[in-house]
Image (cartoon, rainbow, N blue to C red):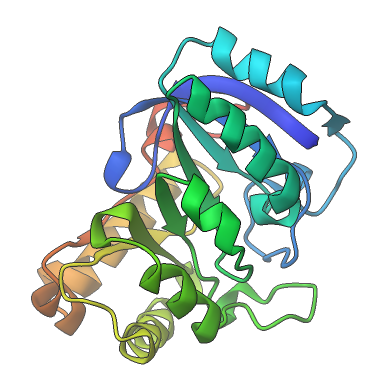
Length: 241
């Protein structure tokens, strides 16, 4: 498998924030968003190494954590190999999470993963591959296969297009016929000059969605949240942690 890095840390995003985990960052992406904060694993494929599945399994088990999170890049590009690895991880009773842009559907992989963080990329991401950033049909196929507590929809909101991005999120939620107890995450994009700048993005997003006026989504969806990337406040842009 094409692996950029593997490390032990705490989950910094979404409803599992603070949870200890082993992160396996797989190389390659089918979108390449303009504000991507892991370009070394998506845009510039110069740092990855080919790792045999059994060797990767051993590395994950050695970290002695009961949760592994596959991220990228786009991990579903390696779904065939990932399914094989997940089958082996199940023997060790390791919980498996995945972070995906929601453009790839694999029915076998659906059954292997314990929790899906689906991150549809909005139009403001201006991806460089000429692909539609999100595909409603695929998102619906994924979430229709999963219990409500087995996924979250995480939307990264750009600083320069916050209001337009939020309108686009509304459209996605309506077209996907999202259940009103679905986990919906609003998160500001993470490319900033420093932590003060990033903190101001978080505050601005919270003000638009909650403080100035309760937005429709925040009122109608009981599990809608505004969250930051917690790890940025801990370590800023430090790698492998």
